Length: 385
Image (cartoon, rainbow, N blue to C red; front, side):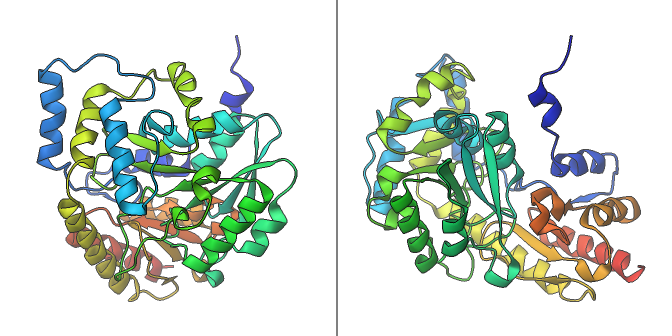
């Protein structure tokens, strides 16, 4: 017996590796996973429990609960002014992660290319490779705000390109696409018939009064994009595993048959919890956003006290990308040594591609006291080099 080539080829991410290593230390401060410490709001938990106690524990349609898809369609319309047909243009997925995979399953044949700006969330690349597609990594830099330039995008497109994945606000960089750049990217994608997979899972976590810019703000993009979103970050529901997709019917209507062969459906109690979340006002999520902004400010203030490193304040998400090049250490070496010596876990930048070597990612998903203590330990470590 043997393992498949895919199983041998795909490696676990360094994010998970460092997370697992960190668990053996009782006093660890773990900056690895993007899993907020906020509890899922009580009214959402209650909706999930009520579903269980009310016997709503059977299969739903492969596309998801009809009423949940209707609420998502209504919410997108209220936020973006674009109406999606809840029957044929909305798909419920097991988190945004499966949503992206479902999209790629419907798009990618062996040899097809998917353009991915890098630094990048590693799962984009792995999912493309699992389908025998070719991820085309286009390096972006801190000098241009970690944004994909229209010129670089145009240059990367070939006759094999089927999609580009854009994530704003961005994991791991915290970058946010501005209107002018995004307009040009949309124009090129439209002209070249390249689908945009638009990952907006962090759209509710923006700082300094910034307003979210969506590709739906531009003409004709409804039919040339798939919107990927999730309840995980917005409502602190990472473990509930509910995501959703909105896109053209020619694509979305083919997803239920793929879902039937992967997971059948999202767990129904989780769907009812998501229904409660997405039917509510954003008062609680606004409070979470304000909390993350306060944590970001504390993190940046403390990091700026350390010699040999630098950090550009993220414009969104709950991640900060820290430049450690002046320490003289590679990011993986830095992360392992930091964990061993100070019991602080960070993600080495190399996880997110060669363009991110010389950086570490810090997730500020814990209280401010832990952030201060974690950065104090990082300072002690760097001062000892």
